[in-house]
Image 1 (cartoon, rainbow, N blue to C red):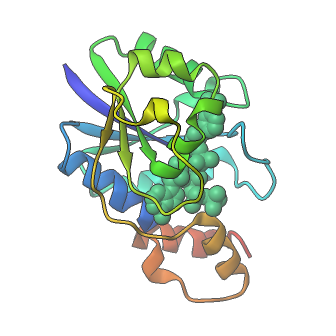
Image 2: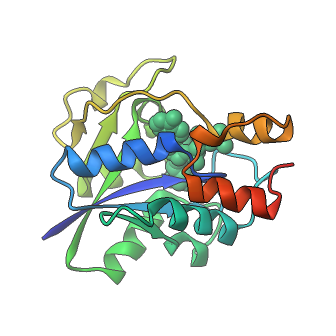
Image 3: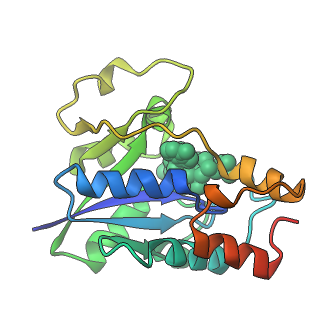
Length: 193
Ligand SMILES: Nc1ncnc2c1ncn2[C@@H]1O[C@H](COP(=O)(O)OP(=O)(O)OP(=O)(O)O)[C@@H](O)[C@H]1O
Ligand SMILES: O=C(O)c1ccc[n+]([C@@H]2O[C@H](COP(=O)([O-])O)[C@@H](O)[C@H]2O)c1
C-alpha cells in the first residue's frame, strides 16, 4: 500500500520552512509521497488577512512543481468550515481506498493535539510523523512513546508566514525565504502589500 504523509497548513504563503520539512519527510521516512493540504479555515485561527484559497493553492502548486513526491491537495475546499482534520481524513479515505494516510506534525502542534476534535480517533487510525520545533509548553504524557507517533529528526528552520507577510508589507527583501516561483507570483500579484 502506498504511504502518503499529509502536511496540513494554511500556507499563507508556503515558505521554504514548509518545503524543507515536506521534502525531508519524504526522503528520510517510509512515506512514498507528501501531500500539502491547503486548509481554508483552521479551527484555531482567525480568518483575517487570509488570501483566497485558490491563490494559496496556486502557490503550493508552484512550490511543489519540481518535486515529484510532493503534491498539492485541495480536498478541504469542498468540506464544511472550519476544517476539522478528522473529517478530512474520512473524506480522503473514501476518495482513495488504496492509500495509507499518515499525518505530519511539528512538535509544537503535538503539544496541543489533545484539543483537536476526536484526536483519539485520529490516533487510532493513523500514524503521526513528528518533526522537532522550538516551542513552549509540555508534551502530554499520553503522546510520549506512543506506538503511532514517530519522531523524524528534520532540521529546524524558524520562519513563519506571519513574518513573511509583515516583511513584504515593510518592503523588505525576503527572496531567499520563498521558493523562487512563489516569490515571483506574490510579486506579480502584489500580495501582502
Ligand atoms: N518554519 C517552519 N518549520 C517547520 N514547520 C513549520 C514552519 N512554519 C510553519 N510550520 C508548520 O507547518 C504547518 C503549516 O503552517 P502554516 O500554514 O500555519 O504556516 P505558518 O508559517 O505557521 O503560518 P502563520 O505564521 O500564518 O501562522 C503548521 O503545522 C505549522 O506549525
Ligand atoms: O481538527 C482540529 O480540531 C484541528 C485543530 C487545529 C488545527 N487543525 C489543523 O491543523 C493544521 C495546521 O494547523 P496550524 O495552526 O499549525 O497551521 C490545519 O490544517 C488545521 O486545520 C485541526
